[in-house]
Length: 96
Image (cartoon, rainbow, N blue to C red; front, side, top):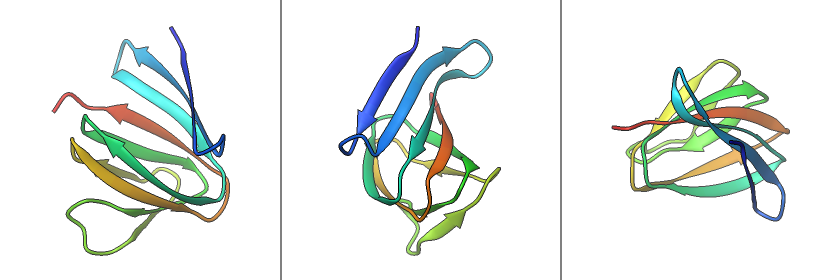
């Protein structure tokens, strides 16, 4: 079953689903802006199009990720993304 999510007054939208091969995931798009997210489970974020500038827990500096690159977010944490152009992503929700 598909689950539609909308955040930050519609500037971030995603479709979540359960993939037989990789488990729970979401695919989404973000408009230009800065967004702060919190997560209960660890996440693996992969940029599909555009780029994401990320401030990840445990990292003192912002990092830029471009298409095909991924980063990890620990469970029970917050992370901030700066989006300079409309961008898309794949988020895998990890079990550990």
